[in-house]
Length: 333
Image (cartoon, rainbow, N blue to C red; front, side, top):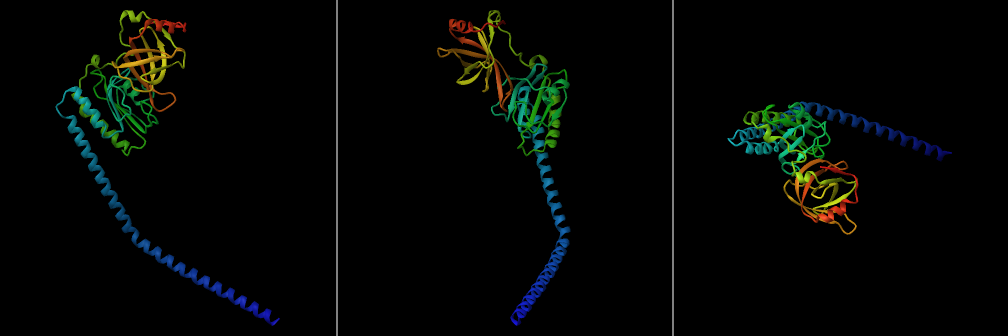
């Protein structure tokens, strides 16, 4: 019994000592917390002032940098250059503030590319774009005024955060327009870039007087000889493939004198191209020349498709006639 009593007494004392030690530790911790809190409170005003000073300095540096860039851009646009060179300069200076830039002619038939910056691959010169109805290019063309948009896809389908289109000439004096877009990864401030774009457009506008007849977008299918217009053109079934310069594309329609194709790679007007039409015997090879090109968004990816009309320059007519006999839904040029 005496041993049990002693054990219980020692146990009770151990608990009491532990409780007292815990209270001492907690009390010391409370004192230290209050000391640290007072120290933080005493330096908060100084920290806030220091942060504010750093922010003001950074903002001032950013403002000065933007103003320097703007001054250089305005100076470049003010140089005594001809209209064609001036439009090249427009593409260059807009490229300093935006990820991708197009300069060209805009009308109801589409947007004809004159100059581009930042696109990979770049759309060929004189390519006719068909912008979507809700794109800044379509709105700016219809209203002949500036239009901006926060959008997920650019004019050629690339991921985009912000886009703007601005006419470069007064309404009725021509059809020149600039389009610019920022990629999602761009560090540019879209609001600042938008205001700079407006200033640059106002700077160059008085210097441009582009004749509408000279800047109108190229027609989808330029005039062709009477013989070609009378050739029987056959519309292909959806999914008919064709090889265009070693790349697989789609064959839209075909005649003995030319074809319309869709290519995943850029084609340039007036450039030579090799077409191989699919055939059980291995294909019909044709040398051709690109007559017209239209860039359009790819329905299943973010890249562009290039719709082109080609004119055959070297092909065996008998082989084409035999190929066309497999189809019976021909239409006339």
